[in-house]
Image (tube, rainbow, N blue to C red):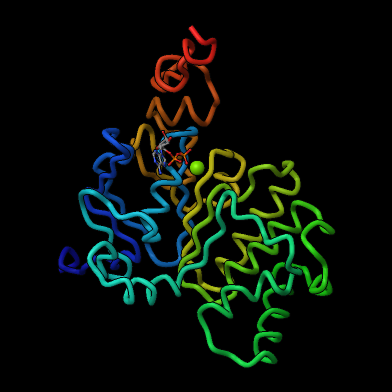
Length: 270
Ligand SMILES: Nc1ncnc2c1ncn2[C@@H]1O[C@H](COP(=O)(O)OP(=O)(O)O)[C@@H](O)[C@H]1O
Ligand SMILES: [Mg+2]
């Protein structure tokens, strides 16, 4: 009877999702299942559609074709009130979402709490202290972003992302702009938080070190298409030429930078 045992329901499920910008098909017929508790990494070159995928999964963008199910609900079809409810269960650490420089560390972490939950100030204070200690930043409550290092600012961003005890956290290039040691520390923290707080993590990156540090499963995206999905531990043995080229950083292969992504004439004004 084992063939009748249904597989676990995915927490995120994309079915034949496409997204166009003007006439360009930026996301091309993507189907993908992400399961509760896993750390799922989406890797690919610049411009391949990674950020667009996350914007679709978080409901910031609507797909032109296909469906996006979060915990069984098609987020492209629900009302904006229902979408708000779903989004309350998300944490996000976006590529360029810097902290607000005019606010202290604790005020930055408090932002989503004040926006989404009606809680007394004393309770919010306790939550902030808990979240800051989870990312190793107790004592930095009153500092301003300009007074702490880049790695610490990322950690404040992490504390803010987990402020509302999310089920799913989306990270867009969490280690970009950090040196390998600090990046490695952020990876470790992401992995620890995911395990400690039972979070499903969706991480976008082109940092291979990060992929090997944190991924349970990996999808590779190229020109808006998923070229492969596999457990991270078999990545090195993959015979997929896109995966091989990407993980080894080779200039030659099916990913043709010169033909596809760089317009030489435009660069040199020809
Ligand atoms: N809002 C938008 N309007 C028009 N084009 C966009 C928009 N967002 C992204 N694009 C284009 O879609 C492609 C994929 O972008 P993106 O998802 O940001 O890639 P990645 O995150 O992998 O670098 C790029 O060619 C980008 O210029
Ligand atoms: Mg991006």
